[in-house]
Structures are given as structure tokens and as C-alpha cells.
Image (cartoon, rainbow, N blue to C red; front, side, top):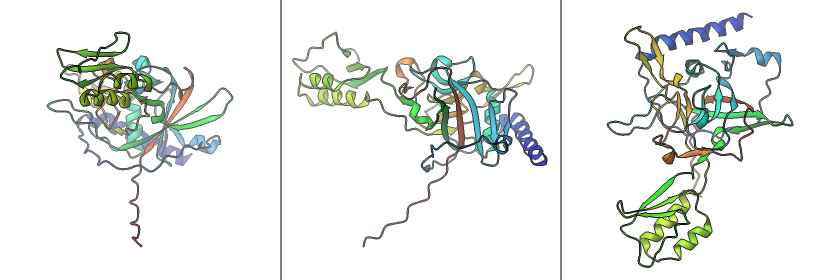
Length: 325
């Protein structure tokens, strides 16, 4: 009981520090590191001792802190299995139409939990005067859920997100090569005003070969090959970082408002309001340009409870140099 009281006191201290000071704190960016391979083996936590180690950080008890193992657990559920994405996880009743998971919790409770496990906030994305990607502590995100048979599954969160093919791809082309006629029944188009070859969606190998056969013009051939390669669905390889969102202060009331309360908790498209964001340039400037979509072959049915396990990504120790002998 005494041990639990100390942990709870520490958590309350972290929460008070977060709410009181984050508006004026400017965290230093964290240097990029390489993570070790993440385990996907189920962790048994069905004993009373294990349960007592998890301290709820919100009234809903959906944000749980394991101080001993420096892990944060988010109790979420699946709200989308197919479609373009801006989020991996959003706040309940905010952006479920573009997020795989949703959680019933204040965003600041998640931020406080990340601070409690030792994560250091960086800086959200900046778009002006020039683009700067979000920075911050690199995080491991593991998803755990049970199927209809009750079997537990664990997987890296990146496997639920893949590159989007439901968007336009363009390539510069001064003019269509002689003899090339575009069939309007296909997704290939040429914009004479902007001198661009345009393709929408996923290009099949058969379509690629048909287009390549129309001309041996090198620029045209390169464009078609590039479309084919870019429209291959691939798992997201980007890392998530603790960008930290930010605060605004109401001039009339003096009340502080945490920006991520708008819903931007764990993003796959860059938002200056994101608590956790991807460490790359990922457009959020319209559905046609979104980089990622839900990997529907991996995601369980809507409504499935999913626990997000968050921990700090560890630096990979440099490999020893091999002898030339």
C-alpha cells in the first residue's frame, strides 16, 4: 500500500507539473536514434500484482502507467478498418473518420504519462517559413488485442498503416511522346497546362507493361515505372516521436488549453497540435495528398478493444567492427 501511494503521489506531481509548466517549456529536440527490434510476444499481466502496478491517469481508466517498467498503456478500440488516415489514434468523438483507433481520455493525461515514463517532448511540425519535421523522443508502439477465439495478438503499430494508393501521383513531362494516345477508361491523364503526367490509385503490373509498350521515350518510360513503384502498398516505416503539442492561453480567462484536445493524439499526418507525430514530412493538406491509409488486412473488426503499449525506443549499440581476416 505504501509503495502504491508513493507511485500515485509521483504521478500526481507529474500531472501538476505538466499542467502548470508546459506552456512555457521549450524542450530540446532529441537526436535521432536507431531502435532495437521490438518484441511482439504477449506480456502476461493477469496476476493481481501486475494489475496493481498500473496506475490510472484519468477518470476513465483508459490511460494506465507502469512506472516500474516505464510503459504507458492506452485502452482504445477500433473505429476504422479502411480508408485514408491522418491518425493512428484520436480522441473519442473527434476524428474517427480518419483514425484507426479512438480513446476516451483527455489528451493531457497521455502527455503526462509520457513524461512520467521519462520521454522528453520535442517540437511539433513547423510549416513556415520553411518545413521542419517534428522532433522528440522516439517511441515504440505495440498493439495488443484478442480475436474472436480469445487468442491474444501483439504487433508493431506500423503494420496497421501502409502507404496510400488512393491519391494522385504526378511526373513532369513536357509533352506526350508521338503516337501515345491515352485511353480515358484508364486512370492515366496528361495535363497540358502544367506539363504533367498524372496517375490515380494503384497501378498493376499489366497496366504498367501496357503503358510502357506505347513509347520508348526515356522520360515517359521513367514516369510510368515511377508510378508503378510508388503505388505499391508498403508498410509505414516512419518512427513516432513525442512532439508534445502545445498550449494556448485564453486572454480573457487565463485558462490554458492543450492543443491536442482537438483530437490529434497519435498522428500519421503532420499536425502542429499532435502529441505524437511521425518523424517525416507527411502531408495533411487534403485527402488527395495523404500519404497513408489503413492496412485493412491486419486490422481487427470495428469495436475491437486494442491496448497501445508505449515505451521509449532504446538506442541500438554500435556493432563491433569485424576483422578483415
